[in-house]
Amino acid sequence: MRDLEKASGISRETIRFYIREGLLPEPERTHRNSATYTEEHLSRLFAIRRLKDERFLPLSVIRALFEGDQPDWLEQQMMPEIDHLLRARLDAEEEPVDAVGFVQSLGGDPDHLADTIAAGVVNVGPDGRLSPRDARILRLLVEASRIGFTRERGYAGAGFGRLAEIMRSLAESEVRDFLARVAPNVGELEAVDMAERGIGILNQLMAELFTREVLAQLSERRRIANDNQGTAGTVEEQGR
Image (cartoon, rainbow, N blue to C red; front, side, top):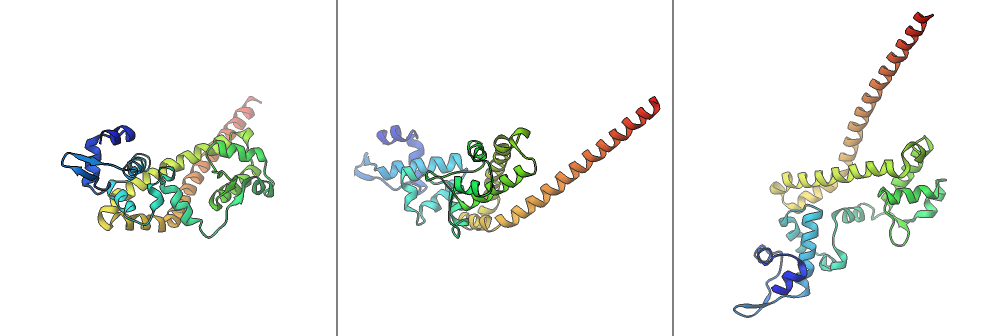
């Protein structure tokens, strides 16, 4: 226990709690006051901490994940992240594409790709390839640059990076709140499946709400600009 506590950075009281809750297997007990812990215990502790602290999953969900058929989740180098799992499931029907070749095929600036990667807007794998979803995001960014959303005007990397960060924060908050509300009623795994099935509807809903609010803001700005222009014309006429 002392070695496991030191290696994981997790207190023995917490480790014993995880064992009682079924998140860790019982250790091999050689004597009444002696037990042997394995690499599996350490790997699970790292996985629990990451899922709990970075993905805000409740312990009941983590337990259900461990009880499933995902042996790689117990490997330290394969620490699970919910967004990666969702992306893999949603993009299963399409093939990744070469990032540089793809942006060139769109007629985009290769520097644009570097900007978006640095800003965290698109993710490129170690093999230099984009997931189908990231390819679609990059296509939209190139199209946006053609109508004026350029680096010179504060977009390209940094501007869209701010938007990506807002979406990331919103997604984490929504997933956390959704599971807190729904999981106690239907079970954690069914709640996760329900959330995944509802992504398309949620995307459409968010797009309509966002479009409505942006158009309302732009309409008000246009009205103010017209009023100011009319006022300036009146003052000029009076001056004559």
